[in-house]
Length: 271
Image (cartoon, rainbow, N blue to C red):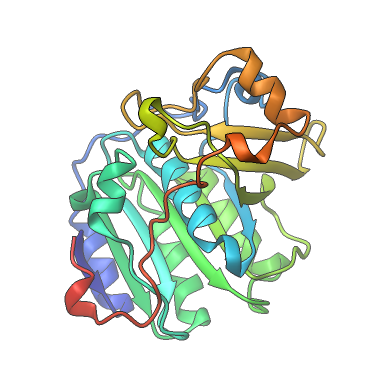
């Protein structure tokens, strides 16, 4: 992982250094490889928009991992930014964990801002850089500064540059926003691999709100890191069994956790 930037000026210098990097194809949706999901979303997740992903404190690893996977799909070969506030002593992403998800840790730049206000300002600046692949904005708790006005600034910057933003809301509740979509992410049981090895990372994804089109849909998403998509993990028998409440004793432990436990010394968090 690239060394964290801790000031807005340093972040702006880092963004400026991205000039000349190929930009993702404008207007092309973010295709996940999960056919029912992509079909329902009219070809994939809208690019150049703001998407909110909510998860409980218990599902922090799942929602963080899922957000990074979506950002990875949106970015292609371009850099990823993850902006977060310094408060709370939260854990850093774990390099080998990222690599296990198929994400190159060297392409991830982490910006640690001193407070929520500075973080949201930095997010708008980052979204104005079209060479950026995707942006993850991590907010915890109520996040009172992310009101309708602030989310509109983010949405306008994303639409202008074509950069896709994923607002990672851990332990927060939905409030009115200009986000294109809003999701609830939870860890889901995965089907064991041969030899009873732990299965691939699996998520339960619920569409809470969508600016255009139906919502209230839930999918089981299984990430195949080798293929780099959410294509079907197994045959329809497994998928149907999960959807109808299959036996819990047939499932392996859910989804790999990307962040390390909070409070671990920074020296042990390197990629």
